[in-house]
Every structure is written in C-alpha cells, then in structure tokens.
Amino acid sequence: MGTTVLEEVVRNYRGQPEKLIAALLALQRHYGYLPEPALRVISQELRVPLSKIYGVATFYAQFRLQPRGKHTVCVCLGTACHVRGSEQIFHQLRRELGIEAGETTTDGRFTLEVVSCVGACSMAPIMMIDEDLHGRLDADKALALLTQYRD
Ligand code: FES
Image (cartoon, rainbow, N blue to C red):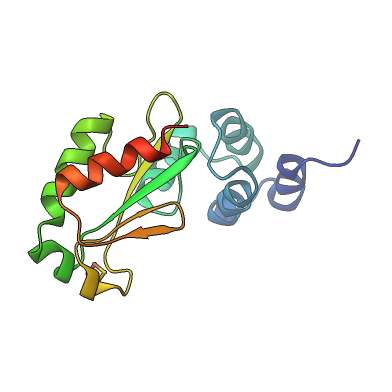
C-alpha cells in the first residue's frame, strides 16, 4: 500500500508547529476539507494544540471543516448585484437551505457560498450553481432553480 497524504504530511512537518498552515493546505488539497481525525494526528505530530488548529482553520476563509456538498450554490454580493437585490436572494437561500455561507446541508446536497464579483455585472443579480451562471434573478427564481439540482 502506498503512503497516504496524511502520512506524507506528517513525515514532512513532524515536530514543526510553524508549518501548520502548509500542512493544512496539503490536507485540504487532497480531501477537499479538513477531516477531524486528520487534524488530531496533525496536532500530535506537529505539536500544535487542537484548539489552535481549529482557530487557524476557522480564521482563514479557504479552509473548510466540512466536506463540500454535491452542488455549490454561490451568490454574488458584489456592488452591482447588491444594488439589484442579491441580499434578499441570499437571505431566502439561507432560509430555504437552513445553512449559513460556508456550510453544507445535512443531506450533503448543497454548499452555500458568497463571492464579491464574478465579472458578469451586466446580468446582476447573479448566482452560480456549480459551473452554471444564472443572472437577472430574484428570490423566487433562485429558489426555483434549486429544484433543478435536487438529484
Ligand atoms: S457584482 Fe455581481 S457579477 Fe459583478
């Protein structure tokens, strides 16, 4: 059996607490998020308290503590989208999905994210679902779109 990514990270950074971020980035690149069992191993091997690791993981927006959902719903809150009502769309999506930005629904279906501009301001307000860009939305249209991604 080959070396796992976790074993490789441990081998590279063992006893080097200053390499914590590099270790977390390597784990996240591989798993897509930071699984708790792996963080416990990192805590022991790099000699960084688990509480500090969670502090770092929640401070930096690029780290995720949950696996990503099957579909990623990303609402643009940039200026052009904001003035055309993207806050309202975002509010409705949070209510409908029961999660905040950065979280994943308990059924693993959707991850909700926000972005500050996707460069399609003329179609504001914008929402991306996976690779698909949807423009000129309102809250009702945004909720209706979700049903197309329920599979
Ligand atoms: S502000 Fe939303 S696409 Fe530019």
